[in-house]
Amino acid sequence: MSSLVVCGSPALGMPAQPSRLEDPSTPLASATDLGLTRGDGVFESVGVHHGVIHDLEPHLERLAQSARMLDLPAPDLDAFRAAILMAIDDLLSRRDQPPVTALCKVVYTRGLEAAASTPPGHPLGFALAYEFPDPTDARRDGCSAVMLSRGYPLRIGTQAPWLTIGAKTLSYAVNMAALRHAASLGAEEVIFTTTDGFVLEAPRSTVLLRTGGTVLTPAVDGGLLHGTAQQAAFEACEAEGLACEYRDITVEQLASADAVWLADSAFLLRPVHTLNGRTLDVDRSLTQAAITRMLAR
Image 1 (cartoon, rainbow, N blue to C red):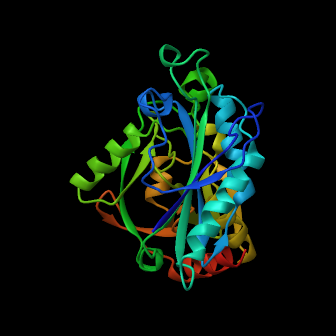
Image 2 (cartoon, helix red, strand yellow):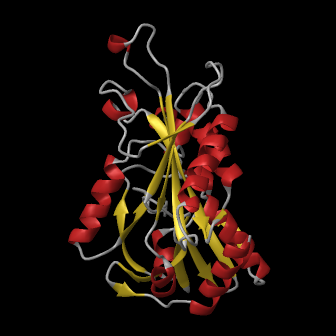
Image 3 (tube, rainbow, N blue to C red):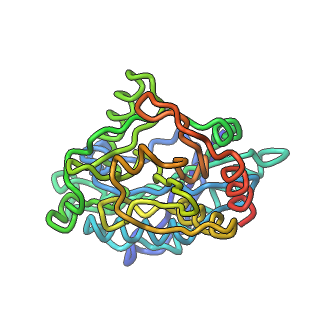
C-alpha cells in the first residue's frame, strides 16, 4: 500500500500550485528528466513509526542542504512539507491502525534536459509514502556487515566539492552495487571505509559504536551524510548516561569496539552482530533502551 503526492511548486519562484494526490502507478517523470537520465537530484526518507512522523524538519533542512550542494534551485520547503503530510495522511487513513513503520520518500530533481525544454528545467518534486516491513526483529537481532572501500581518502570533499560528498543524491549506483557485493559475500550490509583507513557510513545508514561509556560516530566533516536517526540515537544514549562524540574512527577501532550499530530512519537502530565474518558482541539492553527513547520522541 502506498500514497503518491506530486509537489505543486517544488522550487522557490515557481508558480504556486497545490500539491495533489495521484495514483502511485501514474507516470510522473519525462524520459528526459535529469533525475532519471543522470541521477541529477536529491531525496530524503522520512520515518513514520506507529503513525508518528519522526524528524520531519531535519529531513527538510537536509533536503535543502543537498540541493545547495548540487546547485539545484532552492526547494520550496513549505510545498514539500505539505506534500509529505498529505501522502502520509492518505496512507494512514486507509488502514484500521497505523503500521509499525512506514516511510515517505521525498524526491527532487533538476527537471528536463535542455534539448527537451526551452528554457530547460522545471524541477520535479514528489512524496511517496509506503509501508515498510516490520523492523522489530531486525532491531533486536541485528545484521551482518562487511567493510568495503569507498575509493577515496578522508575529507576528500574539502578538496573536491564536485563529488558532492555529504549530499543525499539520486546517484545511488555505487551504493546498490556495494550492497549486491556484500550479499555475494553472505552479508546484509556494507560499512564504507576510506583508502587511508577510516570509517565512513553504510549505504543507507550511519555507523555508531560504543567504547566503554562513550558512543561514537564518524565526524561529519570526514565525508559523510549527517544522519537524522544518528542524532536521535545520540540523544537517547545521552539520556541513558553515556557520553556521545563525533570523532574520526579508524577501521581498527571499529573492529575492536564493544558494540556497533547502524542507524537510519526505517530501522532506527540495528546492532551489527557480525563484521567481516567475525562475531561481535551485541549490547541488547542499550539497543532496546535507545530504541524505546527514539520511538517516544
